[in-house]
Every structure is written in C-alpha cells, then in structure tokens.
Length: 508
Image (tube, rainbow, N blue to C red; front, side):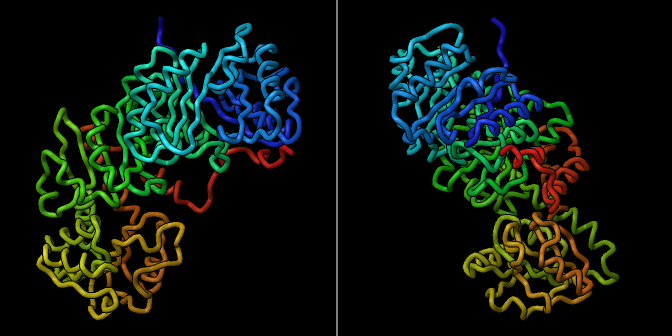
C-alpha cells in the first residue's frame, strides 16, 4: 500500500447557511481538499440538505455539544438524527463522539471519525482512551486534548505514530501547536485548520493559509527534519517565517516550528527532542542561559558570553552557539567603520539579557568602555562583573555620556510601540544608536534618535544576520539572506495583505 499524503481539513463554523456555503466554495477554490462543516455553529435548525447538496468538495459533518467544545444547545436526539442523516446522505466523513458512536451504525461509504476531546488536560491514560475508542468501529480515531507541558505533545505524537488505526492526535493551546503542524509526519490522515486566523474553533488552531504559506504542510512527510524556536511566550516570534521561507527557497525537506517551552519544562523538552527528531533550535527568552548546563559542547563565543541562541543536534551531542554575538559584531564593524571620524569610546547597554550580553562582549572586544544598566539592578551588576566593566542603576542611566547606546530590552516591541528605554531629549547627534527590537523596525527609541541626527542601526539588521548564521549552522550551506530580509520586512510592515478576500465579511 502506498503512503497517503496527509491533508488539511479546514473547519467552518458560521451562524448562517449562506456563510458556510460561501466559505466552503472559497476554500475549495483556494485548494482545500477537505472541509469540516460545524452544524453546531448554525443559528436555528441546521438545513443539512442545503449545506451538502452540490457541495464543491468532500466534507466532515460535525455537530458538537458544549462539553465537547461545541455550541449545540438543543436536545440530544435531534443532534443524533442530523448525524445519521449525514451518513444516509453519503457525506464523506461524520464525526461521532465516543459515547454515541455505538448508537449510530455504519452505512454506505461514509467514514466514521470517533472523537475524544478534553479541554482541561492531556490525561495520563491516553493509551486506555485510544484502546476504548478502537472498539467503536472507527475509520479514524481523533483525540484532542489541552497541552500544559511540551511532553504532552511527545506523548500524543508517539501514540499517533504507533496507532494501528488511522489516528489524528492533536494537543490544543499554544503549547500544542507543534502537533497540528507535525500531524502528517507522524501518520495522521489529516490535521485541522480554521478559515481565518482570527476565527479559531479550537485553542491554538492555525489558519489554512498559515499552514500552507508558513509551514508548507502539504510537503511535510515522515522524512521531514524538524527545527524550531524555543521561548515562553513564543507566539510573537517571526523566526518560523524566515527559516521556513529559506528552507522552501533552497528546496530542503525541513520545517521550523514555534515551541512554547515554559522554564520549568526545559529539561523534559530537551530530553524529548531526539524522540521528535529535532535537529536544531533557536533559543530565546527565557532559555539563553538556562540551556547551557544541558549542552555537551559549546563554542568559544558561548564560553565568553555565557549565553546561547542556537542549538545544533549531531547524534547524541547538543552543541551551543551564539549567532547574536557574531551578527552584532559584524554589524558594528560595518557601521562604525564609517560612522564617525573619531572612533567611539563609551557604550551604554540597556538591558542585561542574552542579547545584551552578546552585544556587550562584542563592544568590549573593540576596546570600548562598556556601561550596563538594566531594569533589574542585580542582573546589571552581575553582567558588569563578568565583563569587568561599570554598571549603573536604571534611574541613573542618563548620568553617562555614551558614544554608543544599545537597547537590549523588549521596550518598544509590538504591540507596546509607544514605550522607549531612553528619553529622546538625552540623544546627541554624534551617537550611534542600536535597537535590538525588530518589530517594528522603526521603534520610538530609534525615531527619537534619528530626529537628533544619530546614526541608527535597526533590529532588523541584527535579526536577519543572526538568523542567517543559524541557518548556516542548521544546513551547512549559505542562507538566502536577501529573501529572509524581505520576508521579515513584509511581516512587520503596517500594511498587511488580508488572509481572506474582501468577501469574507460580506457573506451575510
């Protein structure tokens, strides 16, 4: 038997029949191979015949009760009759919860999805639940649970991979997002997405366009190599956009995912990486320092900086690297070479996190007098001690007259674009001002510096350069840096191309 490619099933939940019909037609025109019609979202009595007669493509008929995550508010008998009617009318799939599957007999060619939903947790007894559902005459078993820990993903994907019956195993919530993207790699016949990213029907659900355009779901298979970014939170990260676009450009069978990993789950996540097949990771807040004790080797830069932003897996080895340092050093070398006739002598670093460490070490390498100031005075003092430099309390940061000012804090990052770590009145025209924030590119910090005539460096420069260096570590080949820059600038542009057509809000 040949390998069947996993599909994306797009869930449609709208209040009016014409909205469902219009969205279904639109999705099929966009290439959707399967759509789930959520009858429980229909206001009033669903007209099944209207929804499925002349349908443009295959459907899953679902009518979910509130405790299963749905909106059906009527009696149980009419709901069961709708599902039986869908089978009698020959729809492609019908979704039956475990407790009603036995009361709805198989008929015709309709395939039975027997489903279990748990919106509170991922239970310890997943295998028992699976065994129970396997006795309900399923064509497909669907288990969807809420993830509290990254290890829930590993358990779910492993169960799906071992399943003798076709299985869809999804963990809900932002921690569970990887299961939605990796479903096909681990054997699921399809995964679920929503029509639009602002209308998710289950926690953590991605849109059809995100699944296609960012993660290229249709190209993921059992041989696809896994990379990703670990952070908490991780939803703001644009790294998946850059790396997946680069993989696509170079024709590589790799996918790059967002892994939300709470600080207390880092140990378990790293232990599970070999089981998932993870080959490389970008590392950001809060793990850049905490990850070091887990590494089997570090490069010289990591040893000096005391933080890593890149992990590469080679067999049983986990190697730590710091491309922030290399990228910042290259950017400053280029900028300072012609920024002023007199080389700057004093640098003020705002912040004491991983990126601040990397930049500070790079400036120390240039022989500059580095002064550190952070909203956390103890962290600033610790970094200054390691660098053998000065530190200032946050309230005293204006008491130094620096030639270079670097913002290594998240102040000014989208959506808090009206924040700045440094009042504009203190800038001088001779200064070099660098913001590590990349979204937006032109932060308030940089705008006010530019108004004073400062030479500015943006976070886009740093982000693209460090990502390109990560890509080279992941792939052992050159990165398409121009493409990565275009992708980032498009993603952070205030003008966005809508995900659906303008007809989306006119379906009523």
